[in-house]
Image (cartoon, rainbow over all chains, first blue to last red; front, side):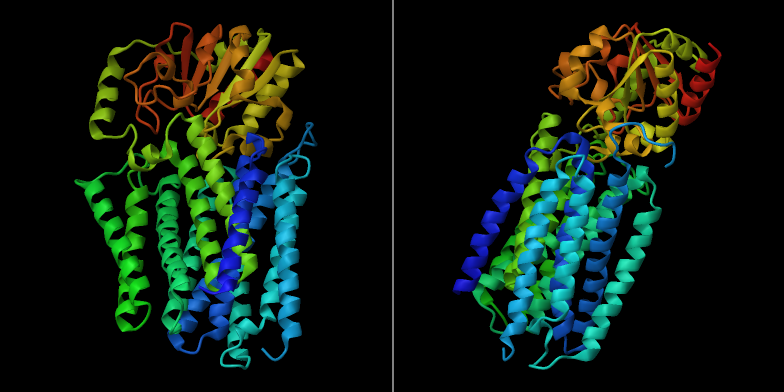
Length: 99
Length: 475
């Protein structure tokens, strides 16, 4: 195992603690947007799909990569849009009567 | 390799992305800044995507393959467009399904990337092979698990636990087979045998994901969705390890940890352990359901009309509304808000009591009521409101069931014994709005319905509440 992977594992562990720490104080009101927001963030795996498709040199790798990029992009865009729609509605005082 | 400045820029962009994700998550923790947090995270993601387009990682054999770059852009446009439209159009009540399906897509991506990476490279180190194997397994489980969760939430398949003979044996067998194949793949490292094993393991992990979620009942879906979300995060981080992509490692780990933490919170709110939720097939065995149905018919309960409820609401001082999944199904959130508004105009004090696992995902009720413009400071968490029920004149339970069942406190033989519930039975008068006397998702009979203080109002929640609104207006 080379140093780079080892370094990445350190980063991973630190991020795990940070993630738990960040969520610890979130009120239940925000649990759904939080879940849907983090759901969008794990769409980061799209970057991996882009790399696979970028390097693809056979038709079946291209097909797998293409499918992966479509699904990854769907995860990212859909996730952020849906979260934004939810959070748009959270208001402190009764607002105007629109949707 | 030659133009290092390029990779330095890409890595710099990834650092910015990581900072935006962390700040975004932090802002997401406060209602006042949450929207900005999400937008910040989206911006970070945009930076990472653009940066990756210019990364030397996209090169194949030392030169850029422009066809592939074109394909990437087309694929992003297709996926992004379809899901943005879906996300815009989806009803707020269908939010849990939407999150489940996006989560499944993320899992699918992680699994595909892992398998593809293994197939097209030779001589990968053991550490990387291990990450690939784990990423493929976890991503696949998350994919099929999310699909089953989606189908259950969409009610395309029954929300009740679906079991088949010796299911646990099948799951255990699949799990062991996957573990053995995984270890073998890491052992052999590459070559055609390892590749064949990878395909078989991939298929087995897909099957396992579906067969784990099938027996889990609808009432446990908040926990299941939180777990699946966490799994996809972990799969993304593992994939990042394989590709030495720090943005993926950090983002995946953040999501994996936060999802895991949320899972524990949910499980605690139900007073159950995570393993018992995953492996329990809760409250759903055929006997459980039959037993509940049998005892139900003999017990007497009172029924009343929306008009009578309206009168007692109009003359009450303190009213608490307890919303549940039935409110979501009936799309009754706007009608409920209207009712609360006219009651408040009459000087009635209206509060909402939100159980942590009401609905089908954590915080589901909060989102629905926010959609109907209910200010979030009118919503009370269970711990904050439970002492107030005894001073409450009227409680209106709308489509909630298990979270109000006193059996959780009084009946050690009940499957939900020990689960913290809302103390609805302490109120002076209780009205329960339900479609029928049928037991809920969990298939457990609710003692509250037979309480002398309780009256049932049957019908579609939206119609019933609308009838109450017009009745209150005439009082």
